[in-house]
Length: 393
Length: 160
Image (cartoon, rainbow over all chains, first blue to last red; front, side, top):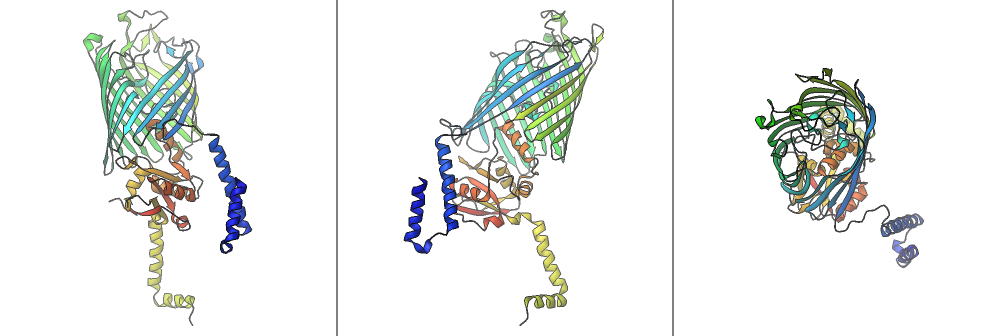
């Protein structure tokens, strides 16, 4: 092929002497023909390329996460371990100008903590799972309105929407988002259903809203519906929002949850903060207060955004409490429900050798307050150290 | 015959304030309006003749995805190794180049948006000539050196 092309070019030069090429021109053309041949060959053999069936484009990405935890707690069992290793695989396909899909599947090996809030807290056995985090179709024909169908992350607050490991400074989520032995405290973080999203461009910012309905993860026969309204400033330095979710839970009946969130950036300083509240049928649930939680997480970028110092002040009053799974406690005894109120103070450091690789180390101190700050006369307070690394690809 | 240098010296002696004021104005102009060194390029079939700086930023950052109903905008970026990339990022994206990778990682995770294709100026011009929804910001010096079939420039206007 190369010879034919070169021959044609030389013939052209011979027949049209006015436009004849110098030696340097021929070398340059030779080089270009080589490049064309190589790229043709590569595309023919699809080397390094993904072929999509019906999509206009297909993007593949994800992350890898390894986290270790160590406790300083007098009565803890197996106090240090690599408690989580996971890989998230994300696939984004643009099927047509208007239709796209997004999937995020997590492959995970995890040792979950059993007996939260007990002085004898323990890591459970290795649990391996494949979890569909997101899987939805999006129809969008303009900048104002879009529709999503599938398994969706509920747009409640800021941390839940930015729940990907790489976007957090530590692996542990804020207290309000951690599961209480498989049950959520304030809102379900996933629904299977649909959402209608709107975006309204203001002169100096953007108003975004999302209305959703779907069956909840905790009980597929029950539904939750919710709404979020958020504002984002033009430069993206300020984001504020309010969220609402209501639904039926098999264990606690109907719930109404509210949230306020804020994320801001001032130069190298950033923070996010959230407030969560839930309204439950107190008489049915034998509680005298509704659960409430808030956190404030500031961080500071040093040296070209490669070093991050972060902190988190987190509070949770979990009035529903917990029922211990084993070790001296009976799961089914309602009287043993154990409401807790505590603070978690965290300080840590993240190093990013490259923009998509994060190495973290953080220390948290958990301090219990209120009437249940001790269990069996022993303090529940403890210190934990979390270390880990996350790679986004 | 008087040389140009002689004329300049003579006039600067006769009208010193005018000469210095004019030099100062042109210097100020280039300092005050760094956008003058850039050209916003789109496909020649794009009916747009001008674009505000805010609108341009929204399109480049994929906050605005469509030119019109069913007509997607396709932003293209200078490659980060380009000598003018820092200036491009600061002026048109609103953050410095060290924040650039993190921004797109966040977009990938939270909105499923991928980073626009990056390339050298001649590749960007070729791509704009092929993709009808494409838009890129090109350094003016390089724009003037290239052949640009099916590509036109549009006026960048202030935000009002």
